[in-house]
Length: 541
Ligand SMILES: CC(=O)SCCNC(=O)CCNC(=O)[C@H](O)C(C)(C)COP(=O)(O)OP(=O)(O)OC[C@H]1O[C@@H](n2cnc3c(N)ncnc32)[C@H](O)[C@@H]1OP(=O)(O)O
Ligand SMILES: O=CC(=O)O
Image (cartoon, rainbow, N blue to C red):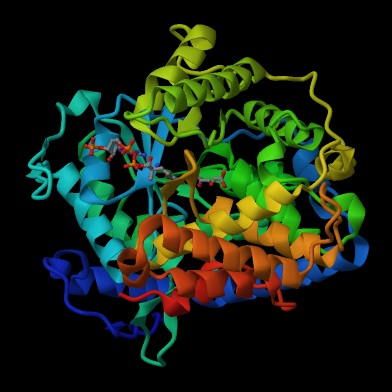
């Protein structure tokens, strides 16, 4: 029996955008409708499984490798598909949102790869969702060059061969796109919208350019979610008549549950997998979120005091490199949050030193490449990886058979010496308010106190406040963290911001709203799974 015709999707509650018909064409929408019809029910089931698993963690306060997939882990015979030429050498990857300027700057940055971000570095306004897709199409058709009317600066792409390879990051499974609904009024998952539009418009064009439709998959919590992505890829390739195996996906290992299923995730995606990435910030968020009520042994100190050399973080990255190389996949390092400043030499010096130390460690540990958040950091990371890789495109031959990570090593959180501080609480509140305010203005990534902040880093801040209150943490100054203390600190921060930027700018911004939202997601007993879920309800556009 043939499948029923896809229900038409409606664009709802959205002002028309210039050139939107180029992205939201009839044929593209029919493809999205088909993706939605086939895969959203399974997405819904998998979200329900997430909740069951979290309930299990709340009951047991532990995690282990899965007994039912032991045979996959024990089987030495399988490998992932060989990397396509454009993804053989990934020694430096720059990340960032897909606005027009960032698109040109990232492609020109000298990095091997650009993670074009529709996820944590992008607030999902309809405009960002649609024009981000247009910018990528314009980049591939070489129609993106422009002059910034505000500054008069002109932006033009360098010749083809020097451009970074794009690996596009769609939204995670949990976020819906409220501006696209089916006949029953149900929204289409943002992941399918972002993936679908990008794949539909660019897959063939990218093949003609000698590249391909490459993706970063965020916030995956299990190998079953990876299986869903694999099925989406198979269907999408067949639909467009593109050979199976053309898509390549790099999975972010950035949830604590996925860390126990790295092998299985690669196995599910083996015909489409090209690597794993150590998404450290979401990983910390996931640890706090999942063990938020597991007692004092799971309380993390101040966010900025948890470094990649903490034993449980090291266990995670070592296992990731070992797993990838055993299976022929690239292991890609994470984001050092220090941002340089073209105006402040001292800030620059600190950023360069910190990023160099981070990238040196990753290169020495066997990673094949790593992320930077800013073009001025590309040469720093390049040097770290050039030193170790030389002329080789990667170091997948370093199998790291010396690595032996046990289940308990990944959650040995109590092994840290540092304890939460009052300054850490203040910083969490400051970052939370300032980040949410920017997000409500449509900015998904911002520099705050010379650190890159995005949805993942802000999630850690608000979750730590929640956890510290729940665990009755006593800070270094002797104060117990309570909801009242958090409210007092937030009120002080709001007053400080008003004094800093003046009444006019304060009123023009979303500061009170951001303050209220932060307190909601940090204090509500009913912990929101993602801060972007309630924030999206309030996002205009
Ligand atoms: C945990 C995770 O998920 S990490 C991945 C998600 N996060 C990100 O991708 C963050 C990426 N980084 C950024 O968005 C930016 O670097 C920010 C917001 C942190 C700082 O940006 P700015 O304040 O514009 O920095 P700054 O003023 O120093 O920028 C200098 C120039 O570099 C450009 N630039 C800065 N970062 C980037 C980037 N990541 N990609 C491309 N260009 C960039 C700016 O556009 C600017 O260009 P211009 O000179 O033509 O105007
Ligand atoms: O997405 C990356 C992370 O560090 O989080």
